[in-house]
Image 1 (tube, rainbow, N blue to C red):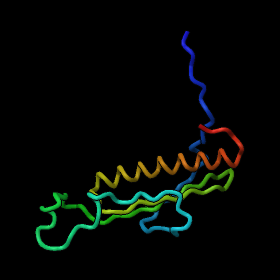
Image 2: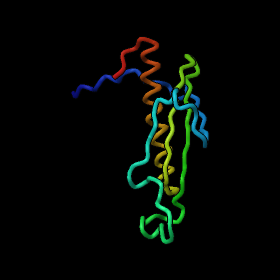
Image 3: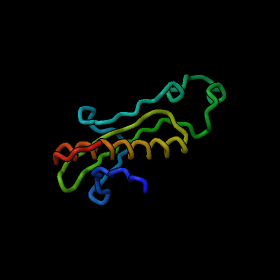
Length: 118
């Protein structure tokens, strides 16, 4: 028989609430900021800009801030992303930010409850 790996403690998703905002919150309390990379910096001005950067037509400046709260302990986690993205990239950034914030929140709650976490 094969040995199964022991599963560590995990945060219950039903105990977590999150809220999204299109405007960034206070920079001091952010746990995670996803900065734009070279492809998603502000496009240069001028005519024919989209053709030069090979951007889709709906490539525009977007930012989103997400706050997560563990209801039982009251521990919060905040993060945001910003940059010039297409619709598909915005969906990917949103899910990436949610996943990363959940992991950070899980570590914070485990530390608060003195539970060993991987």
